Length: 304
Image 1 (spheres, one colour):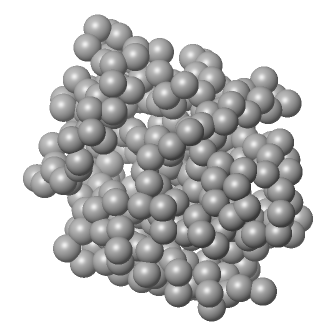
Image 2: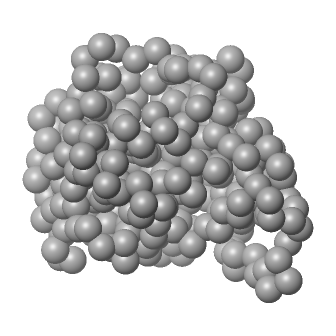
C-alpha cells in the first residue's frame, strides 16, 4: 500500500495511506480515519481498508513515533493533546472536514480524545473504538481492580528508562519478550510479522513508540499498592460522548479484560457494543470478518 508523506504545521511529518472512493483527495465520499495502536502501524487496518475502500475514503497514518513518520525522542512530544492534534492537522492537510474516527489500542485512546473534541466542533460525526479503554473507566480499574492492575504492569516496564539500553542494543522485540508474558500469541501472516520486526529493530523508533506510554497521564500503581482510590484522586473531567459510537471488544484480551465495558452506557449517549468471543487483543486482524461486519452495520445504520 503506497504511502503519502504529509507535513503538518507543527513540524511533524506522517506517512499516510490515503485511498478509496474517490482515490486520494477530495470528493464527497465519507471519510474514515484509522488510528493504529502499539506496537503496529497503518497495516493494522489492512483488512478494513481493503473492505471499505470501495465506498469510503480510507485514511490510515503511521502515527508520530512509528515507522518512517517523525519520531522526536523527548517524552513531552507524546502527550495526548499533541497526538490528538496530529489527527486534526492531518485531516486539514488532506482537505478533510468531517470524518469518522476509528481506533484500536493506543489509537483507540487517541480516538476517544479525537471524538470528544470533534463532537464539539462538528468535525467528528461517529466513532469506532476497539479494545481501547475509556480513560475514566481505565484509571479507576487500575486503582481498584487487581486483574486490570496485574495485566497492566508491563506499562511500568515500558516506562522504566532502565530498559532503554536493552532497546537500543536489541530493539523493541527484546523488551516485549521481557515485559509481556501472554499465554496466547496471535496468529499473524509471516510477511506481517517480518515487517513488524523490521520496524522494531530501529532504536530511535522503538524508544519513540515507548514514549506513548511515558507521555500518558494514566497512573499504573505497583501490585503492592493499596487497592483504593488515592486521597487526592480526581476523576477525568470529560463530557459524555454524544455522537454515535461503536465499541468492538475482543473478550479474550489478556491486557484489557471485559471489566472495561462496565459503565460505558453512562458516559456514551449513543452506544453500540459488539463483543467478539474467542479473540485476543488484536481484533482488527485476529477477527477481521466479525470486525468488518459490525462496522459495516454501524456505518450504514448511522449514515446521513
